[in-house]
Amino acid sequence: MSEADIPLVVAGLRHSFEHGATRSEAWRRAQLEGLRRLLVERSDVFEAALLADLGKSGTEAQLTEIGFLVSGSDHALAHLARWMRPRRVAAPLVVQPATAKVLPEPLGVALIIAPWNYPLMLLLSPLIGALAAGNAVILKPSELAPATSRAIALHIPDYLDRRAVAVIEGGIPETTALLAQRFDHIFYTGNGRVGRIIARAAAEHLTPVTLELGGKSPAYVDDSVNLAEAAKRLVWAKFLNAGQTCVAPDYVIARRDVLGRLAPKLADAILELYGNAVQGNPDYGRIVNDAQFARLTSYLDEAGIEPGAGEIVVGGARDAESRYIEPTVLAGVSREAAVMRDEIFGPVLPLVEVEDLDDAIGFVTGRDKPLAAYVFSEDSSTRRRWELETSSGALTFGAPVLHLTVPDLPFGGVGESGQGSYHGQRSFDVFSHQKAVLSKPLQVDTLGPTIMPPFTDVKDKLVRNWLGKLR
Ligand code: NAD
Image 1 (cartoon, rainbow, N blue to C red):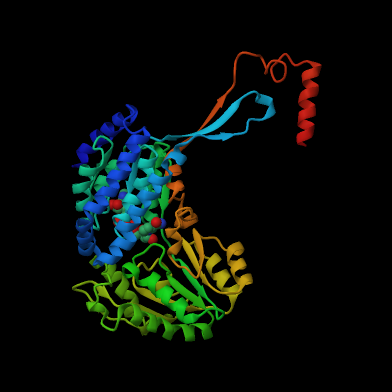
Image 2: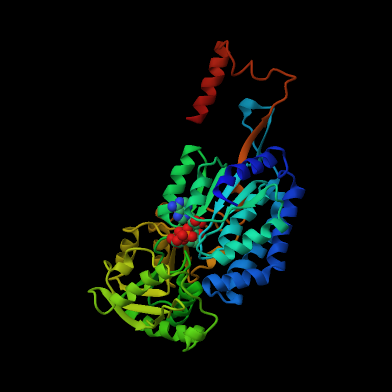
């Protein structure tokens, strides 16, 4: 499909939506079941594509992409009837007798734009919500994960209603052409620079947007916890997908003595999870492209040379040919170091010293609001302070990354890390309009004697009496 076809594709989907093709519960169920079948029957195709794009192992692909989506489809199928049901709300005395309800209705044609790091999951997870809510959808996979993009474009039409779901492959020209069209919702996952482009284009049509962005998610560790277990969970969350995870712990902050004891535990955990020949271990992924590889290795090149860039205390090996970067820990990193400026988005974990809890909280609140904050502390007053004094898309205690497995927890950012959230019923709500429906019988005049002119003394008293009660 070329850029020139885009207006026609959008018009076709809009026609299907406006003629009611996507509204029934039966259609929505059929699509969710089709999506589930696609994931199960084409599992091997997607696994191979994720291996080609990111060196992702089959198990990791199942855990974080394919299986995650199957379970998301099942969740939507199990709850769809309840999500679609109108919700009765109380009507105040002044309009009685009357009934009031909130009726969720589909928005229309949605555009979903995904990045390359979880190229299947981040495209199809919002799709679950969009289909459950009864929308027509255009999917725009990331051109930087070309094998996955191809597999999606090839197989989606065999499993989902072609009249209502289309895949447009491509990069900036195609996305720009798409953004010139009017959509009823745009759901974008990626970086904040492009997020601003999306928001500007959407504003032209007053289209609502969800922006799932990134940022530097901190991990704070104190000495009240089992450091070996904390290290193991940090290592898993950081080096999953070779660090290319939006909610990966970006850096660790802790007191100097805690960092001193944590660093060897991080080394032990890397050895336990990936062995001592990581390059040959199929469980460990690769960097997506040469540009990202060059950016990440510049942090390693600066270590030990640039003041504040830290010392490599674990890892540091790389291979440009296969875009392999060993799980790496940098100690003694200053707050101003290059690696502490932008989101790292790769397998490099800086350890940054803080004086105490106040200093740690001040450090985090002095920066952009992160997508997640991870706290390792058994101390209840410390936990409480992180809950009340910091702001982030999510906050977990002892469980980095795992919040996104809980369907009823909203997944999304705040400030620079994004706006809006999804997962579970929220995915349905994002792609629905909550229509207010009020119904009042006409047989008897119940409004004339109270709220309509002419305003008599009796009505005036009634109104003042009512307002008086409100004061
Ligand atoms: P990317 O380069 O694949 O871009 C994302 C999408 O934007 C792609 O589909 C691409 O075609 C499109 N795009 C790129 N440039 C564009 C332009 N000029 N105009 C219009 N569209 C354009 O991925 P990325 O942005 O490098 O992804 C990594 C970022 O995404 C990181 O910051 C990461 O934290 C964030 N992220 C966030 C989440 C989340 O759920 N919040 C998940 C994954 C990644």
